[in-house]
Image (cartoon, rainbow, N blue to C red; front, side):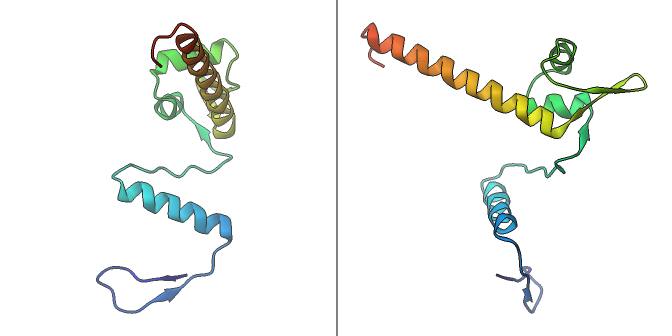
Length: 116
């Protein structure tokens, strides 16, 4: 892979593992589509504000999930911290549950002949 920064003469050769190369292409593709990209270390701990933003929910709703035991967290003094991996595990489960619900509603609509 050869990289050249715009407006800067010369090339730099970089050797990347395949996974890193694929991730770089994904990041560049998202940026090209105008989407914001955030890179978070896997072992990072997030604040409730950061975690709520990732899930696209309100902070009070997220705190309810934490207090209900749906997402593991730890207390640092009076502040809650959520591991990124735990948050992503919850998000995957929640996305799967939503996909299942949509599929079931679609099946029901088809069974009733609603044109879906």
